[in-house]
Amino acid sequence: MWDALAALAAAHDKKTVERLIEAVAVRVVREGRGGCALLKGPCSRTPRSRETSLMNAVLVRFFKVMLFAGALAVLGPALTFVVIMYMSPGAHLRSDLSQEEFVRTLSGALAVWFGVMFLVGFVSFVAGLPRKFTVRFDDREAFLARLDAAARSVRYRPRGGIGGRLVYRPPFYAMLAEKIVAAVGEREAEISAPQGLRRKLEKKLV
Image 1 (tube, rainbow, N blue to C red):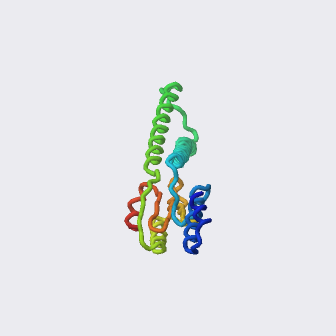
Image 2: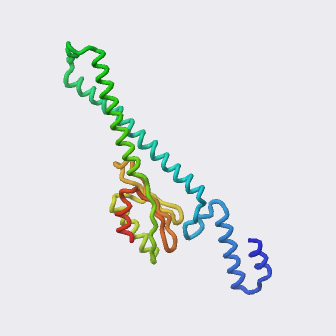
Image 3: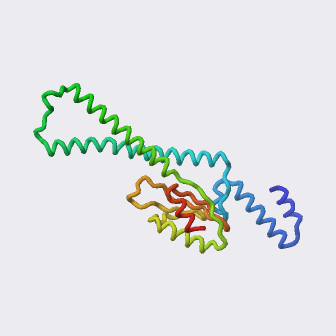
């Protein structure tokens, strides 16, 4: 950057000065924090920041899915018990079934239920992880129109964005679905979308 400033001080041609000023400005923006929003194209992040961002996204999704699965695992037996008590208010244990046998049978059934719900939650966690892909284009405005149409075709709605970063939120009933995030540059876009939607979006965008 200091070399560019020295050249700027020695330059007398107007076009040369303008090019040097533009080069210095781009360099400062790229090196400064928060400068990515000022550039037309998406800035490349360091491998460490990418790994940290990816790990945070994975952890957030894991806890969200497992919390939802845990809530269902607790709510299921509770509702079943309420329904049984409502349908059979005077029900009692069989005379040939001891309380110890009942507790053991109930504990085994609950263990199987919680295991199944944990498995369902883990499969949902893996299947819904976001995947990134890159799309190249010639006309930026036409691509943005295709991107908006593709997101709406899978019932996602725009949530806003900053600069070239666009965010689309899932429908209200898809509580565990991840957002669609697109970092759009001048000639290409990096899109992050749930794994199940990746092929659908690629077909509509390419």
